Length: 139
Length: 304
Image (cartoon, rainbow over all chains, first blue to last red; front, side):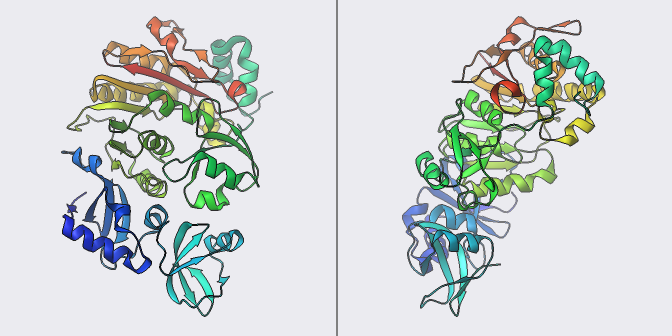
């Protein structure tokens, strides 16, 4: 991976805050991870994974957790690290959740609007867009 | 009978399996049971079963603690599938990682990793710790691999795009290597008409040469005391025991392995006038009519 660099502890803390503070992500969720920047993404990888890399020419490493500029968390980041996040969260029942992942609009009574963390039985599914009581998958 | 199967294939299977040939050829025209493997990096077996049991019938795959036969419609349209809580995978494909047993903290390599079923299984056995190199030489298949590693929450893997037929400079030696070789796919005939249509004896010979070359390159990457599992989804001895025989010539030792509830046939030691090292009988042949899976071949070898 060309142009990939590891974030130091200060940069890591700042980046986690940018990715998750809006949704109440606990920084501890990513404490064992090494965060890296490259190819337009923030990546998270296990520490021993990075330490053992040496000279291997890699195409990718760990998983992309957010886009580099906006710091919008990826769906895989949401599902892995956001189960305990709680701010701006809406909870769907199973039927609503199935409609949501099928990209069908879901009617919802909520005072929230804009980007919301969508959950089902405590499991983070993705970020959704909530406007006028209608929840949609982000594009 | 068994329309669509090449006559030369039927002849080879008769010579290879004797009285079981009819059963095996019948399995070539019938699909195996559907199965899944629970992704313990994102959920527990208990929680996943609890979520799925209202809509599906589940029965444990005997040789894999996280594997289940799953009956019902819509396996790939559940919330749990969306969340990466299980991987849809044939029960026989669970054999190589279970035989290899990569452990947390080890250096492991999956040489032909895409789309990632066995890689994600290895990562789960490693508890997302250590280093797992997921290599895929076919660059068009890397996207699917990267997607699945992300979906299944694999944090200890790096993806590389090295052509395993070329000399591999990894700069490290591995404790565990999985070489699930590209093959003629005879064991997939029940699920892939394409494999049936593309079958030819010439293809088997060409595959065998490629597999031996890949094996030569792979053996060099294995650490002293390390283990290598070689697998294919085909029956052809040229692509199985003959390749293991090459690995033995290169200094590896075949090791017997047993998995609970997996009934197998031994590797064959002679085929079309060629006699292999007798230890290839420790390899396992998995036939669909016994285990309700695709057809498979697996060998475990160690570098002493």
